[in-house]
Length: 125
Image (cartoon, rainbow, N blue to C red; front, side, top):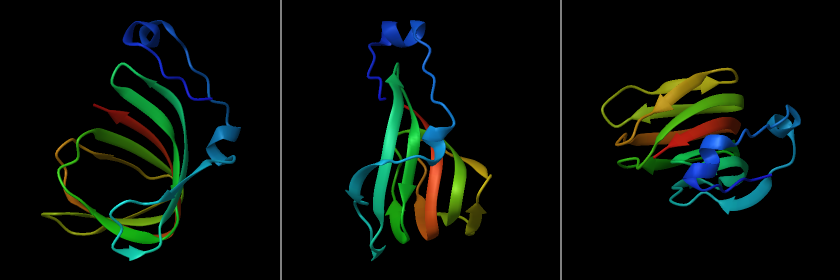
């Protein structure tokens, strides 16, 4: 269901992802690169990619990793699970199902997933 569109096509194309994509099967993507705790395994589906934007669903089993200087801005809606996000210069924040958050380009910090997380995400370059 992924759509890899040219910028011109992305401006003219409507992409529909029906509700079952939110809790359906995801493509296995393997271990989370850079993990330093647990054995976080990932899966996902991208249903729009074009014009500097990517939208999809991503899932990850428990584990943790650091992020240094994000290269994109990501907006997320947690569909399930629990994660603690700790900004490099701040206090830990525990997030769960229904929570929405944004990690801006340049953000640094840490993800620690305690219960398998599934999220709807929007990445902007």
